[in-house]
Image 1 (cartoon, one colour):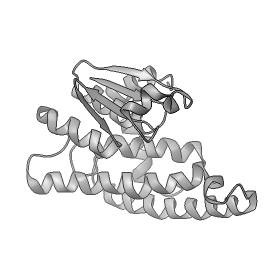
Image 2: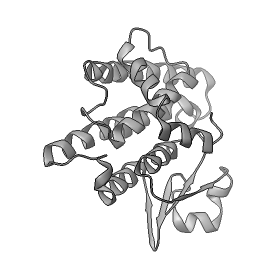
Image 3: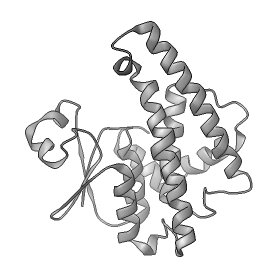
Image 4: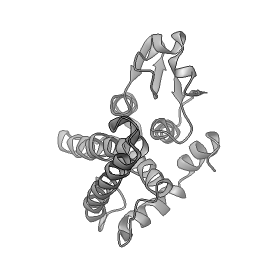
Length: 203
């Protein structure tokens, strides 16, 4: 099994999950330029990361990769045992992937949405930061009285940890969201998280 990634980008989530699963895998570090080359585009036509290659099976999109890894390794307990447990995991995975991650796109690259207009870009990024604060507040409430989003460790927790790294990198204000900070500290102390961060040169 092979994971293509940029350091610190969303493939870090899959990298953490692969560590939690504990089976052999390899990683391929790419530059942004390499993702536009023909060989890589044959694997992932969007020219983005992550891409997971498992034998003759090529899979893109973080949510699909995480779901596949969890389904393939049920003994790791990263998705849930019952339909309701799996639905809860996918609910929080969806919020991370479709709401938080999508909104971060407006913070990381506002110029794309404003034709390079710097003033407009600042407005877009500022509004996105406000939206992120409101979304993180929802997650903070969810974590009250819980160590994990669903009550047990899941693929969604790995995603949330990476999103919190991005929030710190972009200085998104998270004052008063103490449950998130406690969660972040627990995950940072996790052996699998530490291994993935070290492998990507982030620790």
